[in-house]
Image 1 (tube, rainbow, N blue to C red):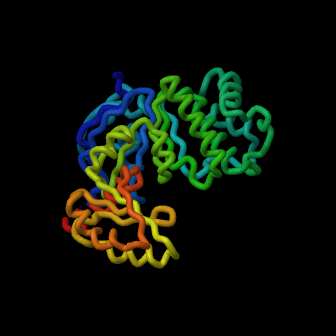
Image 2: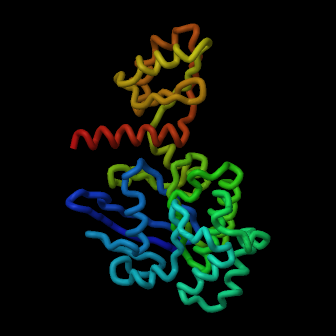
Image 3: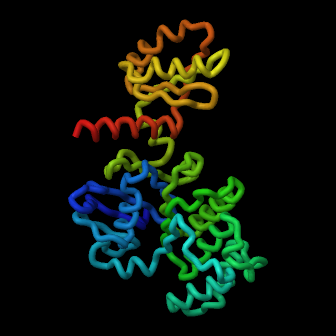
Amino acid sequence: MTLAIDVQGLSKSFDGRIVVHDLTLKVARGQIYGFLGPNGSGKTTSIRMLCGLLKPDAGSGTCLGYDVIRETDAIKRHIGYMTQKFGLYEDLTIAENLQFTARVFGLDRRNQRIEAALERLGLQHRRNQLAGALSGGWKQRLALAACLLHEPQLLLLDEPTAGVDPKARRDFWDQIHAMAAQGITVLVSTHYMDEAERCHEIVYIAYGRLLTHGPIHQVIAESGLTTWAVSAKGNGARIAALSQALSGRPGVDAVAAFGAGLHVGGRDAAALERAIASHREDPLLSWHQTEPNLEDVFIDLVARAENEQRAA
């Protein structure tokens, strides 16, 4: 396995506050790696350190074979960075934006690169349309096209589909998988569970610490969660009352609304069964044990991280 990223013990503080603590990670080339975590958890700082855009206070490693401390300029030449906010000129056309970007970076074969990017993202028929007149999905395609002009080996995507409709999101992810199949490594931060499930591996960070990482099935299996699904025969008031009754009880580590019912989870299966035993006798409630999903795992991780942070 050829590694695109191989780092150990990366840490970063701002004004005495630890933002990322002891991050160790290996990312294979051609993989799509999802970065997840609450706002302010250190995702963006982690990605920037991994790829030489921000110097860590401690730690070491390589990105695309270059040292993340000493060879950051070389790393930057081989990455494409797409921010959440559209950063191109809205009063220029699609083609003019790409021409401008290519000139700023001093690229050779400018016209050839631009035509390839237009074709790859399906933008040829809109090339003369003003960027400001584009919908969110088409702006997203333009931003990605600009990221690809210099043929990067690594893409950094910071919540790239925020505010984009489901069809555009799916089209975008089809493009990402096509690029990964061609050997491009992708690091993407997202809050969407369905997008996380489209990544080859995921990383979950909270309060600057890596809580779990790996393929989806492994993350779920290693969570140690037992999960019960419950629904009510009647109105939602019964489910709301049940949620309140179970929250914080010994053995119950997470209670979350799921559709018209609840998912109730815990890491001690026996204790969890004791906690819900009396409620399972209620004839108006329907219970069944189910496999935890990614959302169940993340809700549990958030709760655990919050408890540890309060105790620290």
